[in-house]
Image (cartoon, rainbow, N blue to C red; front, side, top):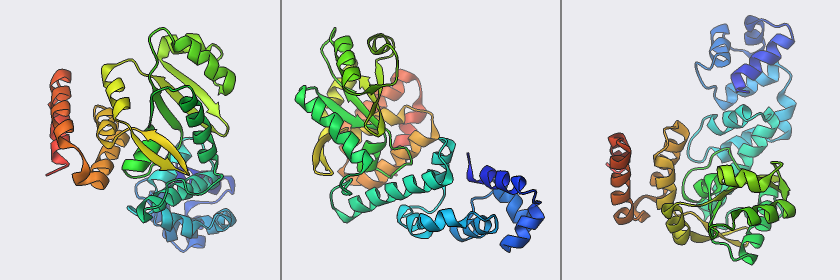
Length: 301
């Protein structure tokens, strides 16, 4: 649930009018209306006043609200990550905890230390458990999604683990069954599900993991180009920034295009334009979407 809707829900459960909440928070009724209807994004101090008036300030005091928000807002100051977590069904306290975790990871990268440096975190344990299995099986793989975006771009609220693997044709169903035996499988017929979708959703310890069974030449090439990154003392193969851009830039979702902007912003001149430019040009032509190339080139102008 979005923060504005949550505020409205709490206010109405108390039988309060917008005017009464505004009076108790020291704001105007119009300001409350704009927040509830998502016409504006409230500043941290404004949000704290509203939540305090509603009697919810203890949640944010316990979570060290201001400090967590300041750490999370290293690059930008808004509610995007917080609201995304709320839309995913997390409570405000859980959303804040997730945003704080992202901020800590991002701060670690900015400081030049190992990502996921907080030993013993749920994400660390889950990622390590999966990578140990993949390495033991000698399965080529690359981590994509939110973790790859954290490594090469700007952090997002989503922290699910997404991994693309490459197996010999005909071996997919056997591997799906072995993965389902080792971890908690989120579908009833893993082999059949992989046959139909080429994806196997798992829960590895505390985190959801989507294992994507690669089948395209591009995926095989991208796995071969994956770079080893140390995450919490574990060497993990992460999709290269160039291939992460290729993976996301064909999407029409604002979230994915914002990720591309973040990768270019962070990686900048370190990107291999000799590899990227012809591939993106070819994709734009093959898909009949010249706006892909226009968007891409505009990021470097």
